[in-house]
Amino acid sequence: MKKQLILTCTAVIASTCIGFVIGRTTPADLPQATTALGSRSSYVAHTPITSVAEPPATQKPLIGIASLTGDSYVQAIRECGGIPVVLPDADGNLDMVASYVGMLDGLLMPGGPDIPPGEWNEQPHPTTKLLDDDRYTFEKALISTWIHETNKPLLGICLGSQWVNVAHGGSLIQDIPSEFGVNHRNVTHKISLDPESQLSRILETTELTVNSFHHQAVRNVGHGLRAVAHSEDGIVEATESTNPERFLIGVQWHPEKLIGDDATQRKLIRAFINASLKGKK
Image 1 (tube, rainbow, N blue to C red):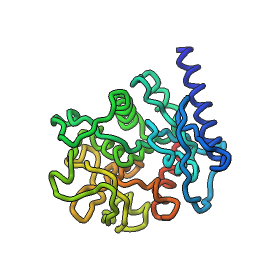
Image 2: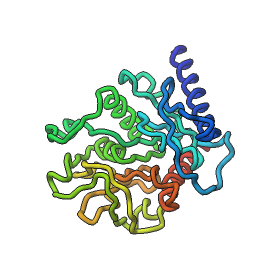
Image 3: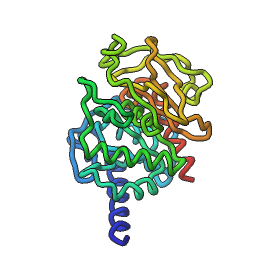
Image 4: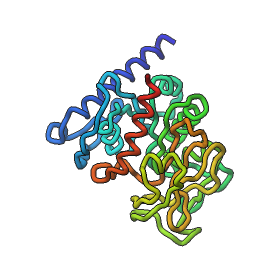
């Protein structure tokens, strides 16, 4: 217990420093950015985001990012008022999951490869590219604990959105092109949002053009969720909790890549940060 407490405190301090260091450094100062505890990756420059009112640094929420897959997630959380905390999935170790869940104010599940379809009793499609075992084990435990043992805010992006559905007992379309004859990879397209949804109220619109990098999507919506956005070809593009008091939203697109130029997409990240801040108080 003493050893775990020391490790937890060390993780909090180190991760908080990551958020502040990235937040106070320019691309000229930082050719490489620390993106995980004990790891390095190339720094990716992004368009500056319009200034928005932020809470004092001592009040900013700690936002966990599971298995970092790109600096744009760190940038978006930092720019919208949170402190990004990258959660390592090394060795698929689950010892720290409870500690992470306890210390964090919000959780962002990022994009990535595919969830093993055995989760909903299917065999892999030939196009399926599975998560590595360590990441799969870690993320499954993390999101399951977060959803079922807390009421804290959760934002799922692309793969993260699919994790939200699977963790609620839902299933996925394994390959959109094979089954529907349409492509959702490396394109932009329009979506429509349920005007009564939390997501629509946050974005203040019922129509949106989004980026798209996925070949899988929600098929059967999980228990406690509802589909709140669809593409023109009928693919589910977003889900949210049926509990109106909880911020639990999954989107198939990548808002973190758009917030530099799109104020509407910035509203989603900022709403997530504000919900996390509210829970922190």
